[in-house]
Length: 478
Image 1 (cartoon, helix red, strand yellow):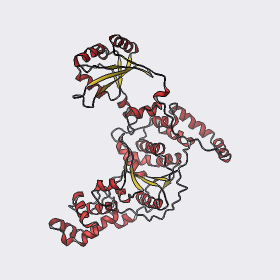
Image 2 (image 1 turned 90 degrees about the vertical axis):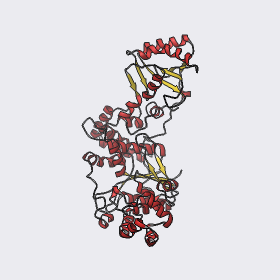
Image 3 (image 1 turned 135 degrees about the horizontal axis):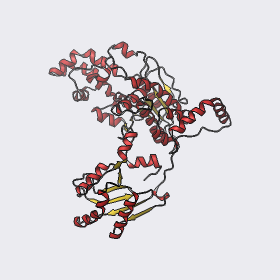
Image 4 (image 1 turned 30 degrees about the horizontal axis):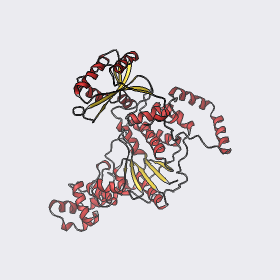
């Protein structure tokens, strides 16, 4: 088994999740903003289930000043205070990590960046196969090597991004990943209040580094520069070197690299269930505990565990002593496939079959439909068919002739059910399907229900495509 280490920048991930949902925050029924906790928990589940790391830790900043604050009192001084909702959520992130069996690391006097940088390079030296720094912070690009990579978690379904040496070089326009520090020394970093050299932006900085390689070498050859560029570098030499120092992530934090302590333990069900109940994470609960998970039952379990905590503790100790392993709450899910199901799918390719389909749709009162096209632009694609379903594991497909007049005859048979306002139409990304039908002169009367929009409302941080929803809610994969 390969040794893979994932180090999470807890504060950065919390901020990212909180502000990603700032326009539609997630609140519990008691009015607690759980957006940051929700996004953080989703990231943990994504990593544990899909990446299956052998070692994992979450790293947080502390409120104590660091060497950077002493060197440059203005460092991060311009930042606004943490939003009250986010500040209230922060202590619970450690509870979530603990429930998942993940160690939490922090040390006064050092930022999470420094701890992650130190442990990443020690892990590389100690023979780990891969190390991933889980963060959206661009500064971490300076640490990337062949084995150390940046991992940016998915955001609102856009998929995770992994940045290696080549990606960092391309992103910054540099020859070596280490030059990220020199880029920040020249350009500065507004988010951290690192000044840089006024008037030098990323393009100019990249050109200078392509010629002179480092900030110090640019300063040493300042006489070769021309005009305003020469003036700016000459007048801000001290500031450039200070900025580079502020941007440099430390690799010598005096923290013990106890790899055994960072080995990922199985999640603790007795801690996860009440947490999910407390923050009302219905969808995440179902992803872990199955479709039978409910907040009400979880809350009941919480009360029972509270009343019988001592007994549970004794039972747990006895199980450990007898050699039993803790239940794996995040197993490989055995997804069902088409071959596992008994289905009844029909093709309505005759007038008789079409009328049978229309009758079935009317009798059902609610039906799902999906258009099949040759592309994604409603104005230019060809509609090749429409699928319908009124119940699980059965459905109809209506193929449309390529000849427009013949296709229109088929659509005329279907038109009455789309026009009927007593029938509920269900679809996924209905805006596309309604546009396709509108191009065919077909109006669709409401009520309509869009599963993609519904999922975006209840679980905005996750992917909303049908494949993802099928796996999450039906344990079915295509």
